Length: 196
Image (cartoon, rainbow, N blue to C red; front, side):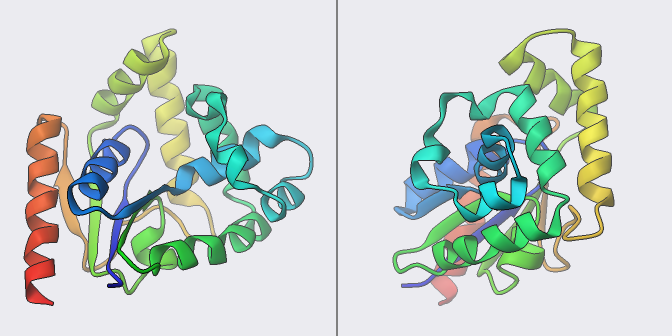
């Protein structure tokens, strides 16, 4: 069975946690597409070459969840040649047999516009910055500034800007518990599976 769940949204909105839970619940494969860009960003050197030679082992690096890796990902993600190099990998993963959940910034709009379920998960910048600060520490005001800078870069880039797909289900997690957010997404996926 080919079945794709595309989950897009800004940093620290909860899409990664939701994506993993949905993949576990339905037995689907999961791909955090941000990890691809984080791996390219932290690999260093020429970003295009780094994207073209990316290996699965590099997606398991311990330093991919740092604030620095997130900033590096945002910087290399604006390079069209980097995006092109990673596009086919993501599309093949999405349409694999057995179902797949992908989370990122342009899954429902560019990578998999044919996805069976599309979600746009968001939260206020302040809530997202607080979540990220709890993960990485540091100065919370600085983390908020970095979240806002990253949003501006991701939403303002010429190639595949962050935006919801026209037919995406919107989920604001600002005041939702993770369990409540996951439950809403699982219900949406289950309903779509029943319709097939």
